[in-house]
Image (cartoon, rainbow, N blue to C red; front, top):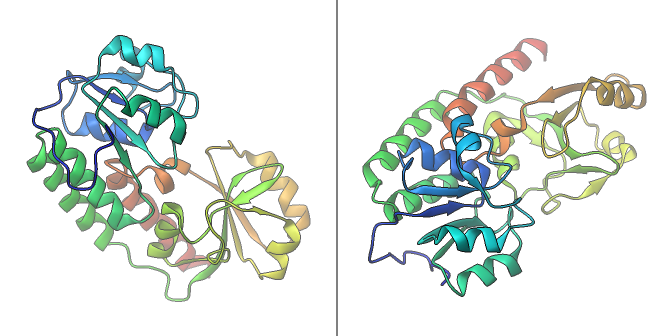
Length: 259
């Protein structure tokens, strides 16, 4: 069954399968070492889990047979990360929580929900409070910098205004020039020019941008600042946000000196 908003379980899960990398990391933070039995091949954090836990395919190509062998009593999926039809197939036999995280506030709601379902409410509450404290120390740029955040190459793809990454950018004072778009639209270099883009952030995931991609873009966008950024810091909602706050704070301080 698909768990509805606020719906509780009448048991404490003892066999959890996570289909979302950032939420796998959250389960580790909550102390669910024994209860978590399955993860995806992209759940690279923590490393000890990546090495020891049973892998059940990728986020977009879940190995349903492998999941069934694990006999889970809770599966944690995500609306954006996972394929709807595969999740619905699993929900015929198992309790499935499908999260939807498009803002920082929704990330806090997700942390609380997972904590509640796994009998880790107090740890989840402490984590959320710690993240909020860290994020409160970020003093955003006073003059928002016209920014494009690219997640894919050939074609170039960016983030729209209804994404978690957009909310992270906004919180730090970066003005997403594609905020009126939705999800992850394809864009062109001409659009970057026409929108007077001052900063292009090239993410390390899902496409692994490198220095050579900076060089390619720089020839077409002279005068525009182009740099690589850690995609996990912008897109991993959950316990990674503790570290992400410091990352954003340093990034903001850097641009306060440059602009």
